[in-house]
Image (cartoon, rainbow, N blue to C red; front, top):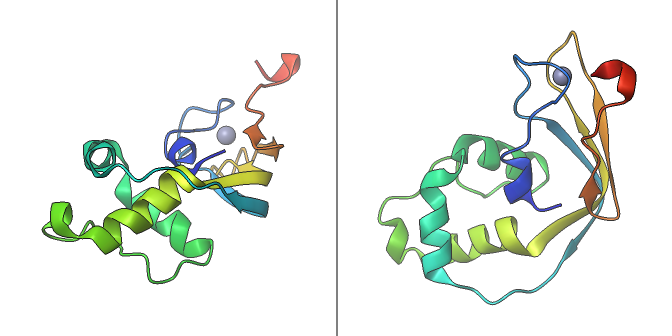
Length: 123
Ligand SMILES: [Zn+2]
């Protein structure tokens, strides 16, 4: 599961305070992918950047900026970091947890795939 996906996912069981899911990573891998500046630039306005930045810094990349840098289209260092974070980093094993204190549903990530499917009695 890429962090781009995490940026979109919310808890399926409850309908408020269900975003962003807390993420725990047991195993992640980097899979190199060709850097395409235009693709990254197009994606930036669609991201919840605050959520992404908090997640990335929680996962240990402390220098990742809290805000999108000014003149972002010329900031190759940032764009390459963002490329690595969004496209090349794959969470293989871990879990997602709903942030709603009255829910806290866990969703396992196994072999790179988050299982967001609710059981029958949860639906
Ligand atoms: Zn929930």
